[in-house]
Length: 100
Image (cartoon, rainbow, N blue to C red; front, side):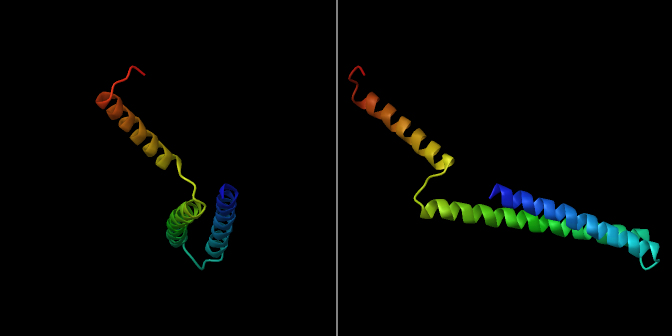
């Protein structure tokens, strides 16, 4: 999963470079002003960030769903259960002290 995310980031960098290069060409040809190119590239970059964030959320949901289907627990779930067991043991020892 990590490699997939890194590949996506790499692709985004290459794509960003190509977009900026294309905008530079359009500015040189006089089809866009520098301001228009800057606004458009900012918009594209922001949309890319939003899509990346959505992809992260979806990947996380998918990963957690796979863990659930495999009957595996997350570290947070394990920690919560360990805390609960510790609390219950404490109550048990208070209720029935036996010198352990």
